[in-house]
Structure formats: structure tokens, C-alpha cells
Length: 113
Ligand SMILES: [Zn+2]
Image 1: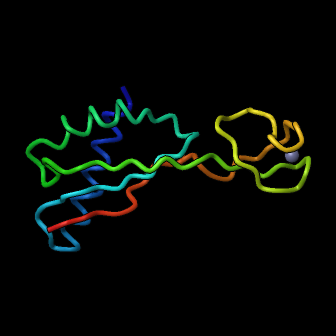
Image 2 (image 1 turned 30 degrees about the vertical axis):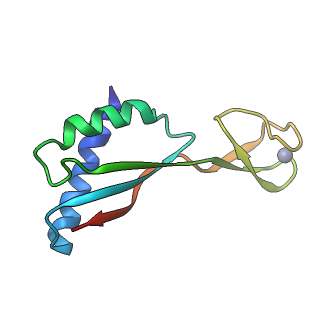
Image 3 (image 1 turned 30 degrees about the horizontal axis):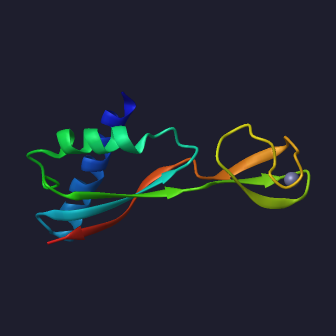
């Protein structure tokens, strides 16, 4: 389950931030998940709780912000929203799409105390 590794990554990022920002506890984590990132929010929530126990993230709320996928269509020369890879352009039906967004997962914001 790669969500477990992702959660361990989140804990690492937050621990680095804690050292820089000198905070000891995190109340809320806002996480952006791209529609094309292959991350399942349900699995992520489950892992988050397991992985954050006994860390400065223990008991923190996980807020997931789902980002739509974005692509540049070579057919109609504009940016379009897509929900999965290899789908045709929703505007013109072209398959010549270059994915430009929604592939990543990142920690957007932390509420700390
Ligand atoms: Zn198009």
C-alpha cells in the first residue's frame, strides 16, 4: 500500500518544518491531492492515523483538498480539466493532451501550536 509510504513522507516533511518553525504540535494538516496522483483519500486517512501515532502529528486532523487534473490540449490549444490520464479532451475530443497539473500530492498548510 503506497499510501503508507506517502504518510511517512508527510510526517518527515512536517518534522522538518517543526525544526525550522519551532513548533511542537500540529493540529491540522491540509494536503493537496491531484486527481491524477493515484492516491486514494480513504486509504490515506487510514494510514495517516497509524503513522502519526506518537509523533508531533498525533491527533491532528487531516484535511484533503482534491485538485482536478489539468492538461494542455494540442487539438484546441487551451488548458482543459481532466479527471484521469489518457482521457480525450473534453472540449474537442483530441487525444493529444499534455498533462500539466494534478499529478502531485503536497502539504499545503499546517495549523500548529
Ligand atoms: Zn481540445
